[in-house]
Image (cartoon, rainbow, N blue to C red):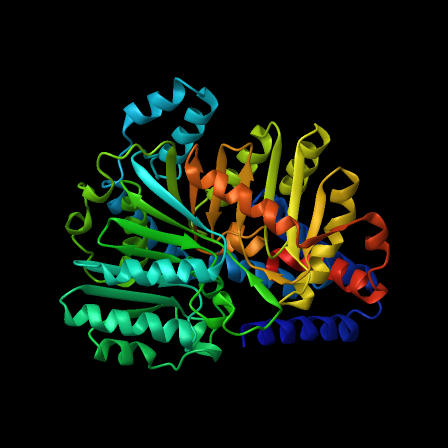
Length: 500
């Protein structure tokens, strides 16, 4: 209704100009120019990503009244400011339980000062510390994670926290739900949270009441409402499981049958996950409680869920370090993008990437191209069978530029890649929910596990090499064969991509 109203105002403005200024087109031009100029000054001076600024300038120049009203509405919307304040308060309260052990940072600095500086950034600005004494296990497929998840859920004694973007009734979710119902009967506290987009097509509106009838505490994150609100654009894209504060899972795998190839929608579904056991789980515990408590009138007593004793890994040497982290769209710190950029700029031998989407801003394009130009092997695995045609066409618009700079692009011929993986130099890796697109990097609530020198880094790289054997490399000749329609439509979408 707001969009419709602003378009009507734009049409009325043009009509008035035509009828009352037909003898003075200079006045018409001057009014448009003044409106556009004032709006553009505010857009350009805004402290936001350059691509977002360009995307706003286009509607302001073409439809000055409509574009200016829309920009003003988005920037002044009360809901955004209220949500930002609430999120900031909850994060501030949970940060008290995530102090950085400086001895761990100093231990890293003795080996790699640059890595210690990265850890300081993550602790001081993202507010997530680096840990040691954490066991990690990488899962190359959703099926692998699913089996491990069921086993770990059955071990739960105190609490289970689960947070997902997509939940769909079927074999995967039904199997997990039966375990959760069993655990509730055993006295385990179970909380389950899923994103509001599920209520559009996947789950009924009253589904939380159904789960609550089983004794499961359930809530919908940011329910979809029939109003225009920029807050509704900030979806909870995270995938988190925390069991007793001792075990955590994350990655790209949602709770639906295609993620474990029980059904096939876009060929074989390639996805990944990671399991943590030990000290670093505390960060995932706090991540879950942060989003859970955004809408709670009284916040949890967070100390009730802090675990300091991990007998299951006691006495075992766990090499390496882990930084679980999340990224909020309601602050000025683009943690997800900064981690990826740091990996690219510090890489010495290779950066291997798996991502389902490729919708890049200038900063990420520069990083990918520059890293490849200085001799680092930069390789991306993309889907060959896409889930969204428009996103596929949009991704293709970046191919030629990246390939010319030396970036290698491969497509997974058996089907769709949903994995979100960065691995570099046999020493660093990220497995999480963060895609290489605007939504993940700037608009969604996201999470991931950053690992340095752990056994899972090698597991991640080994999986990348195996996956590469099932891929076809894309060349400049292949880019020339893309259809004229997809090329044109992709370029049009690229202009407005930051606002999609």
